[in-house]
Each structure stands twice: as C-alpha cells, then as structure tokens.
Image 1 (cartoon, helix red, strand yellow):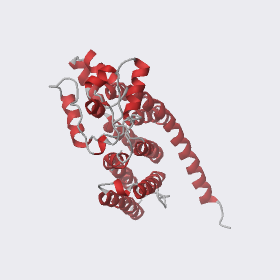
Image 2 (image 1 turned 135 degrees about the horizontal axis):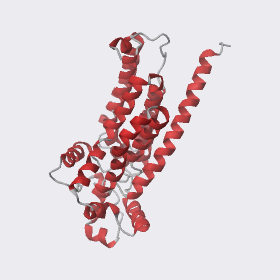
Image 3 (image 1 turned 90 degrees about the vertical axis):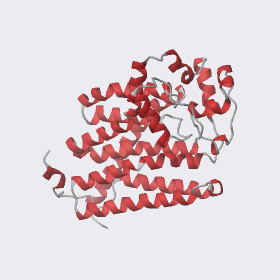
Image 4 (image 1 turned 180 degrees about the vertical axis):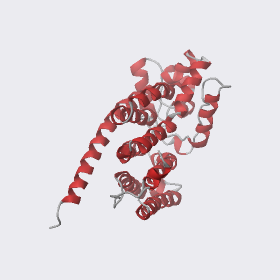
Length: 330
C-alpha cells in the first residue's frame, strides 16, 4: 500500500468514540466500583486511579487527533495505543483480586480429579526434550505478536474490518480481566511452592487464603535452560508476571479468538501460518506451569464463546448506531 492511503482524509469520518473505546470506559467504571468497595485493602489505590485517568485521557486525546485528521493512520493509533495499554491492565487484576481469598486449591484439585495427576507438574518432566521445549516456549511468546499480526493484517489489507477486529480481539482481553478481577487463581508456578511439593505429589491441595496478598515467589520456567525461547519466557515472566489470571487461560482464550477471527474474517493462508504457533502456545501454558490443564481447556471453550458473543455484539451495536444516524430527528 502507498503511504498516501494511510493519510488520505476519510470521506465519512467517525464522529464519536469507537465501540472498543466505549468498552474500555465501561471496564474503567466497573473496576472503579470494585476499587471503591475494596479501597481499605488496596495498597496502590492512588496509582490505580492515576492509571485509569491517564488511559481515559489517552482515549479522548486520540479521538481529538483523529477528528483533526480523520484518516487510517490516526484510527490505527487509536487502536494500537490501547493494545499497548494491555500490559498495564494485566497486573492491575492482581491488585484487585488479591483482596479476595485465593482459589487455587479448587483448580489443582480439579486437575487431580480429571487426570489422576497434575499435568502441570508432569508434562515437562515426561517431555524434557530441547526441541519440544523451545518450540513450546516460542509458541508462548508468540502471544502478543500474534495479536499484532492479526490487527495489522486487518489494518493494512481489510480496513473495513479493522474496528471490528479491534473490538473482538482487545475486547476479549477485558472480558477475561473481569473474570480475573473476581476469580483469584494464581496458577501452579505460584501455588505449588506455596503448599510444598510433598502436598502436590500426595494429591493434597490446601487453601492458602490470602497468602498471595504478600507473597509472589514462583517456580523457574522449566525446559531447555540454554534455549533462546526459554530465556524469552523467563524474561517476560520476571518483567510482568503476577500471581493472578490463571483461570481461564487468557493466552489460550485470546489466541483462539484471533484464530477464529482470521479464519472467518480475514485470510485462510494467515490462519495456517499462525496455526503451529497457536498449538504450541496452548500446550506451553501447562508445560511451563503457568496454568492448570483445566485453565487451558476453559480458555479454549471461553475463547470460542467470547468470539461469537463479541462478534454478535459488534454487529448489533453497529446496526443500531447506523439506524440512529439515518433516522430523522423527532
């Protein structure tokens, strides 16, 4: 595409906020209510409020920029800036849910009941091969690049689908964040060392209550220690991981949303290019002990559900908005 296509002024620019931005504002209001009721237990309340003000300000600022220069480039900035903000929202779920009693014992027990053992404990032990370890690690770190590729593909080649793709992909994150805010599950990498491996191997999974409110010790990433993929996962874990967001696996869920979006709304060729990374990502969530197996299964199921729900919601809201623009004022 030529540069002029990105800066060409649109003939019919969008006047208000796009649906993605309205969704983020709704999430800000939802978590604001949670913060009010949990305020006595929040240790970073001022920073949480300040962060929300900044994100709301960024939405307004980018809307103004777009109105001054309504083109594909400024619309892309509106979306990709909010995509970049997801890195801030993720640890924010920990600040909210650590005020609630931890539920890891229920999900570790669910794995034990379903499989008779802990897949997150045995998977890497039974399959320690460097080639597999590196493939799964690279699949795991392909998570954010996969989303960027899907959105860039729509932005560059199917622009009429761009705001829909943004709403479905980024919106799916906020659906999962609502679940994580209310459902405090840290995952095996935090829970196993908290209860001790003697309990884990014996199939005993005690409740740890508010343990993760003040503890964040976790297991090192298993796998091929000299591998590039291993260190990429380890660095990402050190930089941004928190004892939160284990159930359901948003890695599996959002990746599933992306794959369905590519299959139905974009390019079948791109689908098959991304497919190996998707499969490795799903397996890696359990292999690196970030999730219980039931988390990954729930991520797959909820990813399919969220894709269809958000796609339906977008179509309905866009149809209603279009009707309101064409109906004469009474």
